[in-house]
Length: 142
Image 1 (cartoon, helix red, strand yellow):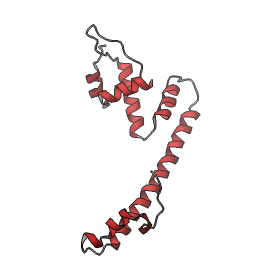
Image 2: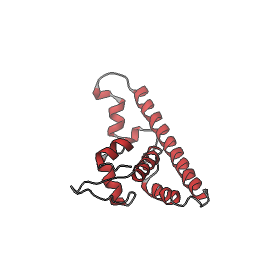
Image 3: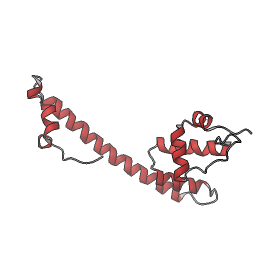
């Protein structure tokens, strides 16, 4: 099997070059050996790990959870209750975000519906953005 340069690894995994470097710095990916020309060289195992990380990120897992999942993946004989727990925590977080986004959508719909459509000086959207007291929903960070 051949090794891949960082650009080839990025293309094969769908992870950007700068992100690969970031994962190395954070310890999610071991620093690869280098060629005689000082280029990083990634093997098939590193590519599989990058794909794992990419898929986990696509599912919304944060780096701490991914680190836990990668550690678990390195122990195939261990029970999967810990992985299930991590995934369950992610479901709870997704549900929280859905509630938050639903509230934001509702607030935006109220702003648009309350707008008389006249000029900007009387625009409910602009008024609401300038003064949060015009909003029905309390401000909640994402």
